[in-house]
Length: 559
Image 1 (cartoon, one colour):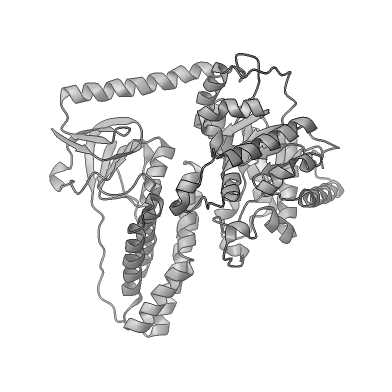
Image 2 (cartoon, rainbow, N blue to C red):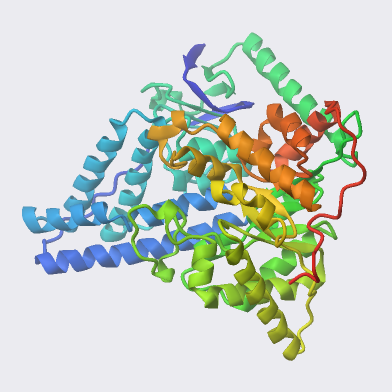
């Protein structure tokens, strides 16, 4: 027996046959180098083809994976638009007098090594992304067809490392676990493994050989241990752990159908964060009491051109119908900062997180707002829904959206298209400004939803995407918690519901804090609903409340 220890990247256990994967290197016949302009044109043609491939992969994977899977391809699209990367390739073509393949390979090596030398594990993980997108370009330039890794039967997949795009396209039914020589716990591959519920271990070292292919193996993703040719005693340990996990999942099933109420009678609604209709199905399977956050931007990010009203309407209708009468809160288009759609032709910004994004883009591009609002109102007759506006800083912004909503309703009415005029319109609280004027916003909004990720970022001036400042990004910082309490108390004083839909809602040690503040809804990933209900039912908050108001009950006739 061989025992290998690495870093546990995704919890769970598995046992099965080891399949050692070695990536094939395609060289192809040598080709003559053209002129500088010809090589640049080949480069830009490959960029366009790569973008088309990535858009299609995003659409294909969104249907059977969590939104994080689709996001991988959006991140790769953004990398291929990075000006530093593009400039490096073009300068190498001009200065070295070699072909574009050489320029892409050299740029990939330089950028990948630069990321690997950074202290932040998150930034080190970007090295794999750079290699991934560069390999895609090289395959296109060399005329190599991209073929997803084929798994013959259920296996434990061993590799030096896996590119995110390779992980996403694996047949999940045949993937027992992932073990890699390299990688990090913060890599996209590790994140995707956790999203898909597949045990994973990274950084096992350069140990996989051809002789190991086909060997029996066992994996403990929590401990980060891989056994090759395990003994009967190891199998017993693995099976006992697996049995414990199954028992835990089965134990949580008892909370389906139970009210989300503390021992002393404080009620809270437990809803799900989703990004697709398929995620709504997962929400129903996990007994979510509705959808507290439907991220509508993924329809835009996965498109090569503006989604039309009809396309948006079909998606929104399917979502509310899937939830079978349970409320769905749609967050309007939240594009900008780290989420870009090339066809929008947004200007480059030195600090995009502070730039034109979310409601600011909505107000700057009224065509986008009108199309989405019409689609949402058309879907409103098929189920219970609410509309939530992100990145509100001032009362006038929310008032402008309400005016646009009234105009959309007026148009639909004139066209004889049915809609519900009483759809609640609320605001996210995700900037310090919104929290500080939450008493004023509560007079205009039908409900609040506190987005703790951005609220933390803007309160602490710590970029949530920058791993180098991760020690300073603390969602439990007293300043953040004071703003949350302030917004919740102002919502309660105004008689409107308040939700928390950011990552902090999944922290079970914070549940009592939220309930003590008067939060009426917690919205989390579907798989977190039952553990959170278990936690709620174990608490004593020390305050009594009557029945909660209907979620997002509309004020002043909806729009």
